[in-house]
Length: 154
Image (spheres, rainbow, N blue to C red):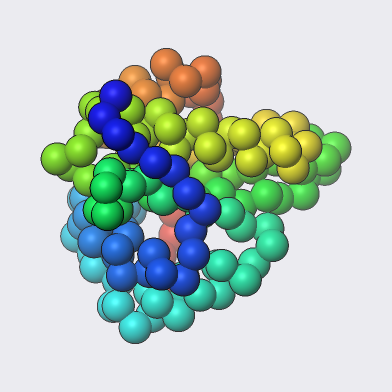
């Protein structure tokens, strides 16, 4: 593993993780391969709101001064779980930094936070063709279940 550090996201991370979020979005987050890049001003406003939201937690992977990965999760209440569960919202590692352990470290940070919050489970959704991500999640103990549907309301 390279010299990677993980820290809780802070306001100073906004610009550094923007290219990562754009890369995730441009891969066709909607499942149809539709490229998308969030406008920076709206992204920055949303990032600041996320940092103030107690149900959300974001982690940043850095190699030196470079942000190479980000993962975020939300703690949700569920009647089926009879308690809380965490949902990993985004997890992305820069293309040139993949397969160096950053994804595993980000997942571990998310799982540790979910356990700390006494969540019953952790769930995530990923693109159908993201085979490397599927291997990472399965290797990390996740089980493939269900199907995700998305409706674009914009």
